[in-house]
Length: 202
Image 1: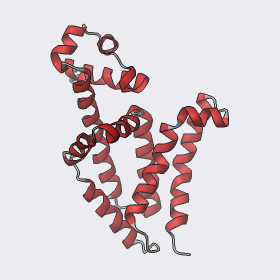
Image 2: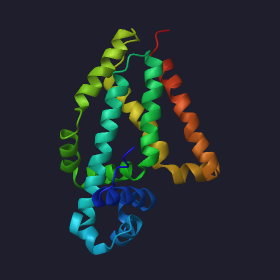
Image 3: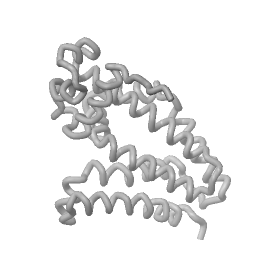
């Protein structure tokens, strides 16, 4: 089997994901990313010039990945509850691996909303297609009349908040890192049940 050679650019992007996950956008330093990638800082600047350019490349790559996965999951030929379980598990797992993304989006929405809108416009799968598939799933299984837009926003909020608010949650409930991780794993199982109870006809 031929082993794929990882390009310098791919090494940089993987290193950047690691450092952004660890330090967030504001805390990350180009030297630290260069060290993580095993290259010198001059070479890092040659490829991406600025931290903003590098983060933009990482951010777009992550969005392409999650949009494609969500579209595939929602369109899968399985019952709605299983679909929600897969959808929520995929999305929370993505947020766990890319915890810097929600905070960055919130900051950009306050200071540079056009940039976030532009990224959504260039997504490999338009958000409208994801919503269309979700609406079809609700109609196919004859759930109670539900505005699928509310359902989608509720799902996003229920998934995102515990990731963004990790320090607060750990403080309030006196969770160790291990206890917090288990709490999130439990949410992956509990949220689909909670949502199905909300939309299932009595």
